[in-house]
Length: 329
Image (cartoon, rainbow, N blue to C red; front, side, top):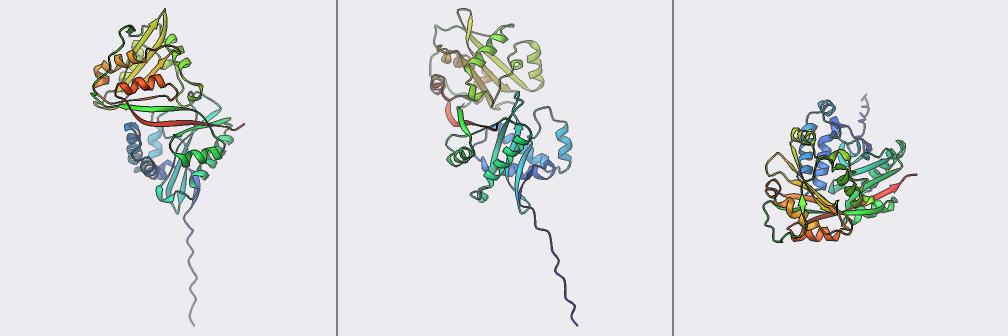
């Protein structure tokens, strides 16, 4: 008599969308982001991927490390698509800064070999469902303007473009080939002018861009306490303003990091009808801490005057990002 062997059934590895688990998914998400945005990430993005890989190797300890990260610097809650146990797609979903009813979706990415299977759509649908479940009234995202497949996906889900920003980069120690206008007077801002500069920035920022990087009044501070806080964080801010008839009509901020040669960031605001773009840029680029490193600026794509001035001073186009929004109500 031959005894029949019963077949041993092993549960199939999970396939589908589920919430991100930092302890077991972070290394996989880092791989998805690195491959999906290869050649597009700035130094900050590359640094974030390295940190994800390092922390992802810690397994369950990763959740404890996140508890000690400064507020706003933890890992955004999100979703992953798992194929036979492997993380092959990712999307983050977070509450929009300062806006209680809005959500932002980011890092929608799928490994190249898994694209074309509807994974990105499923991640987006799950992200929208999460935002609705948490009482969100709208969802926003940004996407490269030349990424036709992604834009088509978002439009098919009901997203509409609200605005766009152009990112430009100037390499370190690039020569200045354009003379600054001599009839425009520029100076450092004074204590007590924070409100005026903040109001200028709000007025100069298109409404469709405010959800992405909302302006916070605390960032427009020129006192010693702000400088001390930045020093502790390894950062430095330099400001210049242009005044006309007792009104501040232009302002520029250069943010640099303590680490040598690390890429810095510029932000510039000019009141409607004024033409002080060139003098603001000249003042910032003449500063040693700015000239000695590459600088990136994200600026409203509709402000062609500023973008032209940036191009004449050695800034080169990196990408244009379309900002899109979907009302959930």
